[in-house]
Image 1 (spheres, chains in turn yellow, blue):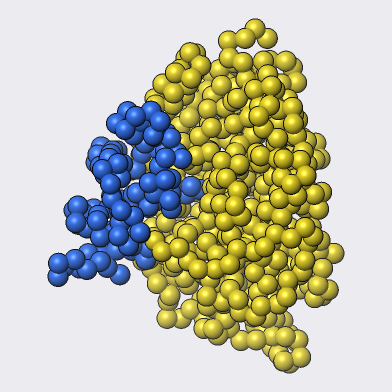
Image 2 (image 1 turned 180 degrees about the vertical axis):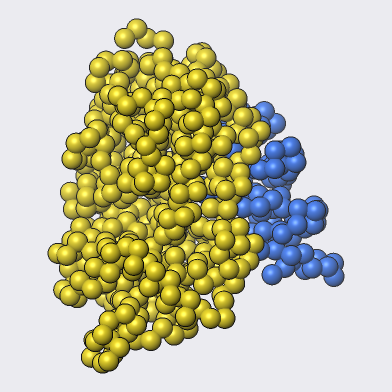
Length: 498
Length: 110
């Protein structure tokens, strides 16, 4: 795997708007899904002959289905407020990565075919025919948007640019032009139950190994139950938590929390994935099919609560979409939120003194928190506005004595995406990923230089994998990133009386 | 896409992962390793062989913890960690070692 050649952005002390680099990222695109991957999702195996008509027909259907999409395509006045808000634009300088310009790739076609002015006087209103070149540009540049919605925060009209990206990707899938990374993964969820393709026997073996590890490290029998009927909680977590570093450290943290709180819980082989890539590709049908596995598992196991692990877009999918995708589920205990985030569960236990935590266990760390985009801008926690910001921070502060915030222009609802959300966490997009991480890296560098921060906590599997990969490009250790429940895992005093 | 070795072509995907598990041999592994700028030492082979054994049993590469534990047992506890595996396979033990072992690339948020 010869490493691709590109320059890592220099991190200067202040934010700079880059000099435009026309077509700098014109060659960056994910591998296309092959016929088998496409067909497994019910999409055409390759670009169909009548792609032009089919793409417009699908756009027409989406406009009818989602009034929001029509509003977003109509409302933009090209004021430019979004231009310098996108991490991919800031990192690459490619003008088509200005959110307004990226959206206009779809908007110009919408205007040509779906508005009167565009039909009659296309050149006066920026309307253009759908050409093969434009279709290819859709594939290139709508796969350079992580659907993080930072630009939307600054848009005076509140245009949700992610919805435009999702619509474009849905159209591309419909004409047989899907991304391998996302579509192969969705196929694995349908077939095996998780993004990794981890079969039940391997999952069982992995969890048994985890029990041995924790026993060896702590002397305590902490269980990692699988498919246990009658458990109170079904924990649905990204499958990366079973597989990768540093993800697994948080998985151990979840188990320790359940252990100490005396909550009977279980994983499910059928629903062994919290992530829902159906959202990334803008397909409500795929999203529903993926989410349905969670409902089926909850009913089969007879659980009372469904808790989501550290996964940003899983929380968005659950928080914002489950009510229509799979809810309500009558058998759940209505005293608990549906869905419930692992941070909500841990936070509630901390507040009522049910966990013995020793923050000194994390005294070797100076911790900062990276808000994950989907949690920050698409959800809440604790049923209160801003709970998605305060709850993870309060957990960290209960587990660590040294906590430092990054530049407020880069946290809370203004947080920067890690650079590989939205279905872009794939090796062929490494240049985009490294450059897109630059705004976050700049803010991190500041707290490293000023406060000796050595640990950036986050609650998203994609953030963890992305930072593990890109931190070394900025000359930081990959082990600087980890989970909030990794800190909980270190601080929790198993066996202590509470 | 493919690899050429001794007059035979082996199908690979866009990133150079073998398409057919049964195409794998030590010679093919050495060829992939050379393309990855990796000099295969006995310790590299321990990892590759373990991946293949695990895959045969479970149809998936082992989780990183499973791998580090197994390597720690074989090569000594000081080597049973993620850092050592990255020393052997700088592009990441899961992805690069799987490629040399002729296994599919792990997918998902990893």
